Amino acid sequence: MSVCLAVDIGGTKIAAALVDCTTSHIIERCQIATPKTQQPAILSAALESLLIPFIAQADFVAVASTGIINNGILTALNPTNLGGLNRFELVDCIYKITQLPTYAINDAQAAAWYEFISLNPNSNTDNMLFITISTGIGGGLVLNQQLQTGARGISGHIGHTVVNANGPLCGCGRQGCIEKVASGTAIGEIGTSLFNHLCSGQDVYQLALEGNSAALNIIHSSAAAVAELIANLTITLDLDTVVIGGSVGLAPNYCNYIQQYLNEKPELYRPRIILAQSGGDAGLLGAASWFAQQQTH
Image (cartoon, rainbow, N blue to C red; front, side, top):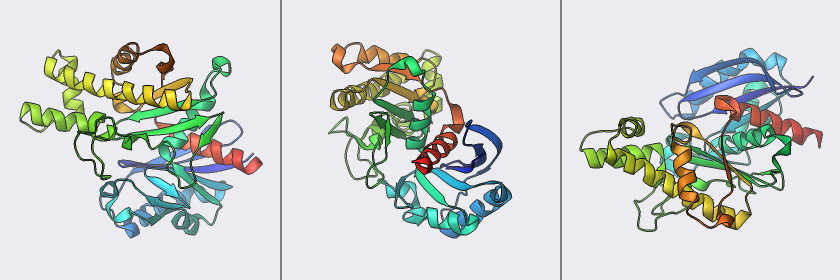
């Protein structure tokens, strides 16, 4: 039995798990809060404390991480998201801790792969897009049944696709990126401006669920932008299926709103829309599965 030490590094938590690569079963799991400071030495120490108990039972390490993973180095299109961690030598850091073969991909890419292999074998899906709509917006692409990571690790980074050329300035340097227009953070920023008090995306969504028409308009605007993005990528990539995940994407009615706006478009622009099924461990399981497969080829 091959056992993977899977690691999922996000903005709020870092999870680690031993995964049976044959069954994709999690044997043991633990998580810690992501250190608030973004000093590389502090992140390294946190990773060491989390991973050491698992090392003796693992054959290799597979990492799913926020940001762009290029040759084992963690960067970001929006460097302010990572602060002191920008250009963090992630794979090298974890190898030094574990002394095990270590591989890494973006967390949305990993989740996309796990959602793809979890689809019903009769779904007839060759080309799938996974979108996570949460604090930010991320994505992963499976084309011709193969996960796309890209030569520089940026494949699927749809959060920085422009949907409004006159929209607000994004941290990546462009105007009107969908992350700046439709994410949970963007929903909160629009609500804060409209209601004249500090709002989170969750606050605005709750107001919408309670029937506040202005808040509901903000949510609809977000869903319409995501539908536009899906339509553009479908006609570009010939998508069969789009899987929607993330705290906003899985919120009550949100996926229905996306479907509503897609239904207004010609049929060629309307792939099958389904909700993500794998939950919070999709990144862990996807990274383990993807790199286990690579080792057998």
